Image 1 (cartoon, helix red, strand yellow):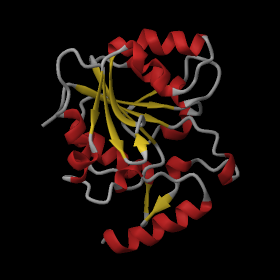
Image 2: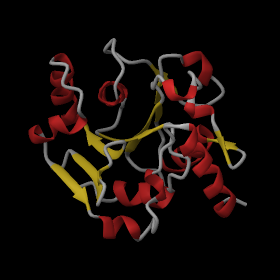
Image 3: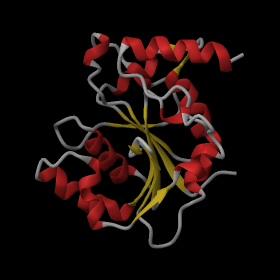
Length: 202
């Protein structure tokens, strides 16, 4: 089943801790992270958007490639760009550095969409997960206003919209170890990801 929701992948990070290496192309368990995310998105969404400031690197994937509208890089900038280009009212947004994102968890988040709610976001003991969340088109203007003010923390605009948080017990029903939220920021993270991949990927 395809959801009336767009899938957006943010691939605009600068990746300083990987000597400029693009994290979307890092292989974990023998497969690039972006390939893993793309496979999930193709099965769920009719429209897939990738936000990247080096679009020529992504031409092998069948998706809509767009670049940031605001001239500075941040996750909020990517969310703004994704919301600008989406053709659906709701958009699921993830980063390009999550090798263990589970389709079932994405479905849980999307299935939690309800009329009048603008953000559907996971919340665990470690806090909220704004880059594994759904945003409505109503978020676009509040996000844009914060970017104009250079307020780049994602949750700063939440007070202007209606937010639904998904509790950890609900999330663990589909992802017992919450591994979907593991992202790769450093070479040490990559080593941990490879160790985990050896135990879960055939």
